[in-house]
Length: 258
Image (tube, rainbow, N blue to C red; front, side, top):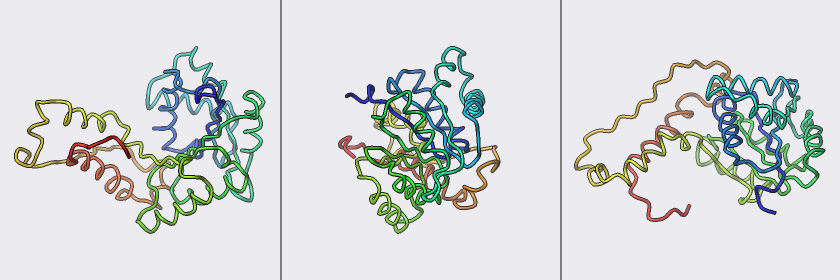
């Protein structure tokens, strides 16, 4: 069975959080509008609050209207029909309603489904959520996506990675920073390596100074828990901005292998 034919349940941990509403849900909806999702799918938002399926659907529509564009009625109706919410949190000793909602999704998709765990949650919740996935046997044949930062030092990275590998094989794990998927960031490659006007002069003999600015006018809002544990330096400087600096300064890649 090909990937687009395999029924898939996407579980979005932190489904009502800031990262989900600004980045993940608009991106997921765009995959839907481009017909890039599997033929049969369900999206299950997970969080600590007790939110009805319909209320979660309304939150997604509000997020799309604010951070992307308002969905068209006919497309939205088809999308919302596949969106569910599982409240009560998710821990190794208490799965909340997630297991029940997954079973609800299987009533439409069948028992042979692939689970995609997308952890759009504060990094301090990575370990307990990963342990809960194993405790409730949701790791078998599934895949997991971890949003940055994946550890805050080489030591914490290795500690988290050891835990993750007790639950998933490496082939099941995908680590992502949404900043590298931004069109403006990806355009640096085209500007540097595919544009002759700049390609030959983009070097230390012609570039005197590089300045990277990130103007931002939003406050902490509902990112308070994340910022308490992470802070702006780890959230922006040593991840996003250092990555852009690397994009600016890197040599042309010799291959596209990892």
